[in-house]
Amino acid sequence: MIELNLLPRAIKKQITKKTQYVAMVNNALILTAVFLIVSGLMLASQKYMAYEVNMVNKNNEQMTQPSGIEEINNLMSEASTVQKDFVKWSKILN
Image 1: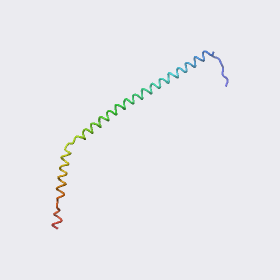
Image 2: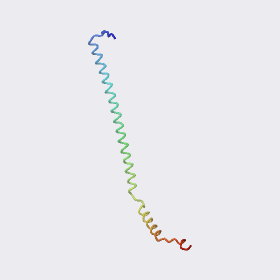
Image 3: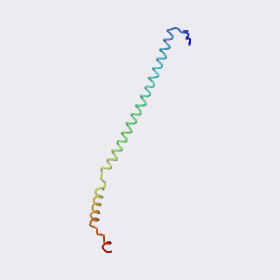
């Protein structure tokens, strides 16, 4: 292909500088947008993780407070001692 040099060398340099400048500005804008999106996602994930940790702590707090568990265990042990001494009268009477 034949290239025609219709433009002077100074104008060609200006055009290449302008296109390079536009490309650099576009790249900077894209990088800034990506940075803002990633930082927003990280902030949102930090807030979500803090919320989840608080929920887990609340659940663990409720589980560590025995509400009648010891009483139920005592009743179960009493029932097992009664059943251990149980005699099946139906077999004896037959």
